Length: 97
Image (cartoon, rainbow, N blue to C red; front, side):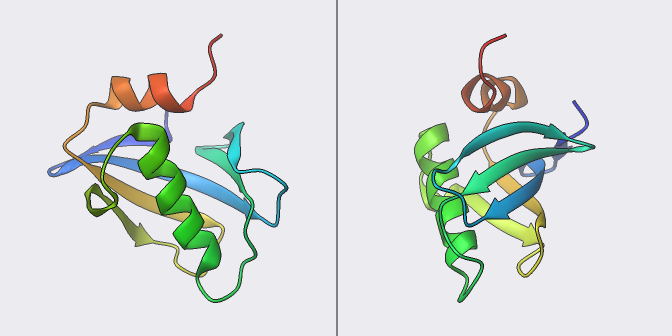
């Protein structure tokens, strides 16, 4: 899966985020990224806040372990998740096959 990579502090996620959806959820793979719909508008950093909160809840991690590395004003985002295994992220984010 090209959307998940290793980092010296944990795991990086390449995400394509779509703000303005009715519900925050994983939509599927979108090219080299994991597509996530966000139930927040793309104004005043609200979509980024919802993304971090949703990842924190979904991965059962404190928010301080999740950092937006790039893409603050873009749909293309790179997120660092500290102290977690990539297999655990796949299991928690992807729907069962």
